[in-house]
Length: 131
Image (tube, rainbow, N blue to C red; front, top):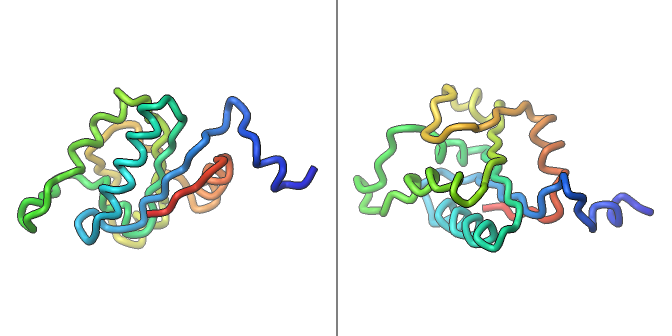
């Protein structure tokens, strides 16, 4: 069996869907779209993991206000993750460091991973969507 075939069927420990957030929160609709997809899949009891890297790490930073730009603040909806059983939330340590950001997140239980750990965690998923 090839590695591609091995990844085609998820074991109970593997998540079905990984969503990578790589854009700043109010620079485009990508962050809101990623959130919508995550909540839809989770509402249908699909295992969803969220990954934040690059400028996407800004989505986790506390004390942001999209209303200053005339944009609805979707980041407050992140607090609903626990109701949707979205528990696997990962952020790339290198992305935080290169932006000189602390681990001051507006949600709890975010796992900060090295680049290697981040890649390994991502590789455990059957499907990956990047926003």
